[in-house]
Amino acid sequence: MTSPIYVLGYGALGQEIVRQLIGTGRPVIVLQRSRPRNLPGGVGFEAVDMMNADSVSQALVAARVVVCAIGFPYSAKVWRQAWPTAMANLLDACARNGTRLVFADNLYLYGPKQGPLTEDLPPTDYGVKPAARAEVTRLWQEAYAAGRVQVVAVRSPDFYGPGVTQSVLGEGSLMAMARGKSAVLLGEVDLPHDVAHVRDYARAVISLIDAGDDAYGQAWHVPCDDTLTLRQHLIIAAEALGVPLKLTVLPRWTAPILGLAVPIVKEGIEMHFLFDRPYRVNASKFRSRFWSDVTPLRAGIAETALSFRE
Image (tube, rainbow, N blue to C red; front, side, top):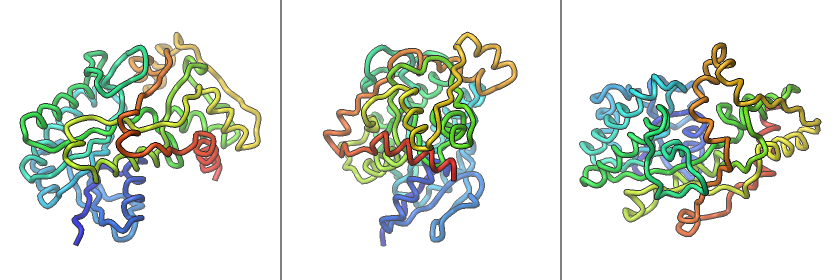
C-alpha cells in the first residue's frame, strides 16, 4: 500500500495540494490544530500543535513525507516567534522519524533586491517578517547540511486562484470587482509583477514530493506565466466579468495613516519592496528539471474573477 502524504496546513494551498493528490488516488492525511469542515471524504486527519515539539513528533511518527503548507496570522509579532519555533519543531520531528520535508515557501526571505530573483540569493536580515522567513531558511539548510533531514523548499511569489483571498489578486481586488466594487491597491500598479496560479504552486510541490534525493537540500522557484503589471491583471479580470475596470490606487505615503485603523495595512509597510520595483522571478532551474506548461494568466485570472462572482 502506498504510504500517505502528510499535508501540514489546510489553507488555499494545502487544499489544492490535497485535491491534486487524491485526484491521482494517493492517500493523504491533513495535519493542523483543528479538523477542517470541508475535508474530502477518505482524507485522514490528525490534530497537531506546531508550537509543541511533542505534538509535532507524535503526528509524524509514521510519516515518510510531509508537506509544510502552514500559515500564521499576518503579524510581525507572531511571525518573529512562531515561524522559527514551528520550523525547529518540524525539523526535529522529521529527524526523529526519518520523514522527508517539502517546505512550501514564499520569496520574503530575499528582502529588497534589484533584478530577477534567483534561488541562490542569500537570506536577508531586513525587517521582521522577511527576517523570520530567512531564519527559517537557515534552520532547514543547517539541518540538511548536518545530514539530519532530507528537506527541500518550493518558493512561490504571490499566488492567486479560486479560493485564494489573502493575495494581491484576492479579496481587495478580484473579489471586490466580482461583487461590483472598486478594486483597491496600495502603491504602484504599473510595474511588472509575477504571480503564480495556486494550481501551479501545488503541482510544483508535488513534483518535489516525487523528486529524487538529488533535488533536495536546495530551493526551487515555482514557474509563472509571462510577467504583467497589476493593472493588466485587473483589466483581464474586468473583461472576463464584463464590467469596466474600477480601480482605486492609494499612494504609499498613506499606509502609516491607514495602518492606524487597518492592521493588515500596517503589517504590509515593511513589505513595500514587493511592489515598489519590477518583481520578476527566475524559475529556469525548475523549468529545465520538471515542467514549464503553467496556467496561462489570461485564463487563470478570468477563472478566478468569475469564481468570486459565483
